[in-house]
Amino acid sequence: MDSVKHTGGCHCGRVRFEIVAPAELCVSECNCSMCSKAGYLHLIVPADHFTLLSGREALSTYTFNTGTAQHHFCSVCGVKSFYVPRSHPDGFSVNARCLDEGTVEELTIAAEPFNGREWEKQLPDGRGSFPDR
Ligand SMILES: [Zn+2]
Picture 1 (cartoon, rainbow, N blue to C red):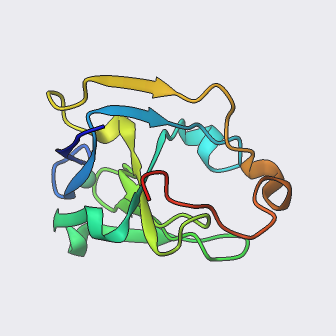
Picture 2: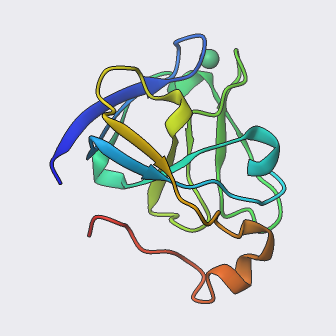
């Protein structure tokens, strides 16, 4: 599958990023206390496939539970367009809902949601692997 460059960001436009990922994306929902409220659609990318273009100064960070996940959100518009997930602390999870139009050819939501509510059961090793490595 060929990788393309996608861009995206928050609602007010301060936070902008660029990622390298397939044009046909498979993303996942998560049933944890945070994601289920926000409707976040997870697209996991390795750190070297993610570039923050602007908005670092606008980002606020929320943490809870183990504090591993760094929930970055725009302090102006409140949108969480990407963050550092507990499953991939050396990478990023991009919110597929925050990608710009034009480069995503297909968006599939995995039939099975990530079971973040029962974290230890979902990832007994404490973390996940990167899909494209
Ligand atoms: Zn914003």
